Amino acid sequence: EKKEKPELLLGHVSILCAIAFTFHENQQRPLILSCDRDEKLRVSKYPNTYNIQAFGLGHTEFVTTVAAAPLAHDLVATGSGDGTVRLWDTRTGELVQTVELRLYLAKYYESGAAKRGANSYEDRTAANDRYGVLRVRATDTAFVAVVERIPAVVVLPLLKDGNGLGEPQIVDVAMPPTDVAVLRDHLLVSYAPSEDGALVAALKLGEEGVYVADEILTNALSENIVTKDVDIVPQVKSIFVWGNKMFLERPRNDEE
Image (cartoon, rainbow, N blue to C red; front, side):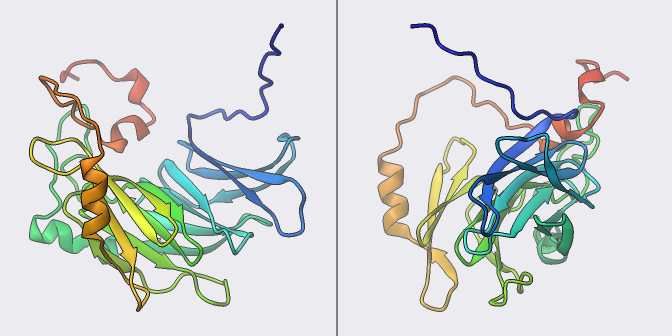
């Protein structure tokens, strides 16, 4: 049986960084949320993706991630290399709120818990205090973000009226996460491989609405992760390397 070729529905002029789906209130078909290296969020109608419902414009660096609020259908959050999480209205593309992560996370650089890199030609931003957002996820009541180099999870609660985000909750974890996932009332945090560190940690939502470590689930997950011995553990490059618009034109050595 001859298989049909996939049909191209959506394209970006710039590098596509993330994609998600959400249902606009009272609509039968989903909206496609896509973000790219050209600092924008695009809201497209499915399946006729040439019908663009809105653009979200305001980020000043590449947009790495997008997530939709399950119970607030018109709200989505994006994270970016500009160190912000931004809340948008998908109906109009209006910027509802901007959260400057530096205001809450600078203490990790000041204490040495967040490590600066070497200022090389490969990554000119490495020696600076940067707050590049790796991932934003959505729970029923909050958005959750992890930030490059920062050993913490940022929880941004949705206000009860659905019109914005409340005061962030900062949850310390053992190492800077590479990603975060939502599993009912738990957050699962992943780490880059290291010689003596764990690969995953679990946080549970406590009685007061605050996330705390769940050692039982963390241990259960760790015991069931299958790993392979390797001679060299690959180093995870900064998102500011590929996020730089001149990335493809850079030489492959340290000489300018």
